[in-house]
Image (cartoon, rainbow, N blue to C red; front, top):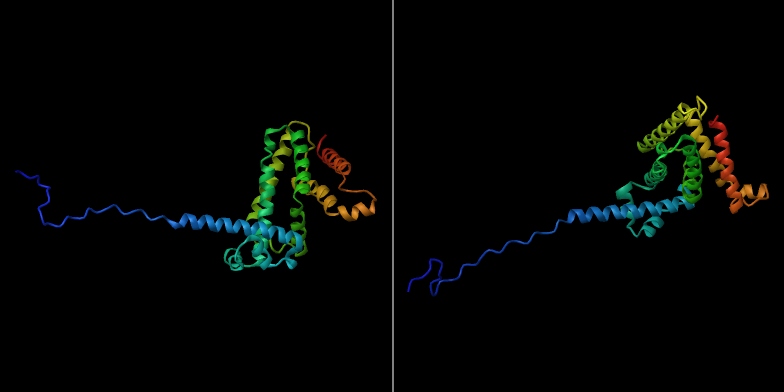
Length: 234
């Protein structure tokens, strides 16, 4: 009987067929995701801690505990409490910038766009009280934690450029006064909301009026819009 070439002779050991090696999982993406998640938790916990207790009163061990992270990881990722405070401030200003950017003011007519910006600024401060307290803390230290930031100047210039574009459109349309300073206007829009909210406790006592009552808040935003309108519009 003929045998096929591949037939195995009796008594010969069978040759093992090499099985393809299973690909080992790459741990790098998983480690990267874990690191990013840990940093986000640390930043969120640090934001709350700094807003509540200020830079001096904030404790790294409390931040680590609330972030469910090892205290050592804070120093590994951020270098220490002071550097972490800087990062929290940068993130706070970045969040404001991105939220403002989403308004797409360039798609609106100049006057409604200006009103939208004033209303947004007020609402953002009202809904994000931690931002106000973080800015207060930064000012207590004369903003030394922002001086070397590469992010803050970029954000500031982008915001001013956007506001200047709005002013230029309004002036060209004949509805805005000429020569309105974008930086001064930006400061004023922020100030008329910032001062009211950061002084709400003392103000409520001094003026015998609940600054945070719904009717008081409604009157305030109407006043803010009217104030900016009178400054900018013809």
